[in-house]
Amino acid sequence: MQTCSNCTASLDPSFHYCPTCGQNAHVHRFTLPHIFHEVFHALTHADKGVLYLIKELSLRPGLVAREYILEGKRKQYFNPFTFLVLVLGLSIIMNSLFHPYSRTTQPTRTNTTQQTLSPQEQKRNAVSQRRRMFQSFVEKRANIIAFVAIPLFAFIFWLCFIRSGIAYAEHLVASVFFLGFCFLITALVITPLTAFLPPGRWHSSAQLLLQFIYIAIGYFQFMGPRRPLFLLKTSFVTLLALAFWIGFSGTLVYIYLVYG
Image 1 (cartoon, rainbow, N blue to C red):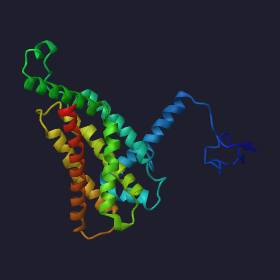
Image 2 (cartoon, rainbow, N blue to C red):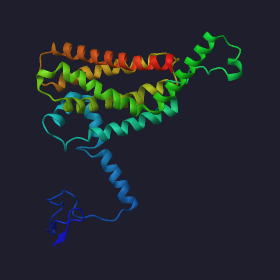
Image 3 (cartoon, rainbow, N blue to C red):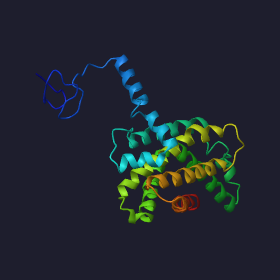
Image 4 (cartoon, rainbow, N blue to C red):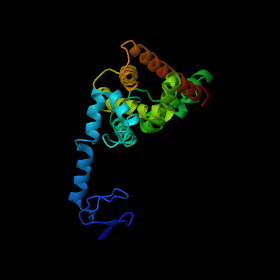
């Protein structure tokens, strides 16, 4: 008999996994081939790898969320919170490469020039400088913005579908699935396009359009079998959540830009 290196439970030589804690019964020292194998296996596992999750979220987002959250199929899919962390890391990398928010902003005037400006011009210059700082914050701290937005989205959907019996925490996990996928498409498709398309507000507009369509369809599937007209309700609630987020974040940005 051997013992589990994790929980010290007794193991029969025929065991592949510890019956107490579930760890692999045959643990070896780390080697570079072993690390490469683990990383490749985690990404491409046919049953629960991240690529499998991305494929499923692109084809049937609401059903994936429903199976994972409400039907208890936790081993079938890649962990949504780990998925979100990976996506946000990718988003920060892509923002640092393409600067979708700040690349077209004009630099503010120097301090020596500002001394000759009128108070109104100095105020406008200060607002412009704070705008640049905010845009830089958005590009470098996309994870913080996501961690604020996702709970707010989940709260709106929980409030509007409270009679369904789905708890707030379950709506939170669904929002992680849906917004995580939207962040992924933004990082891989929308953000790189800023290097080829004329500057403008189309970057933010494209994100909002993607989120509106994807989340509305995702929640239509997530809420279970419904009549096609139920899609109108999920679309309205998605629009409401987006409007609430725009109003909330826009108010904070306005206060910062105007009053510092």
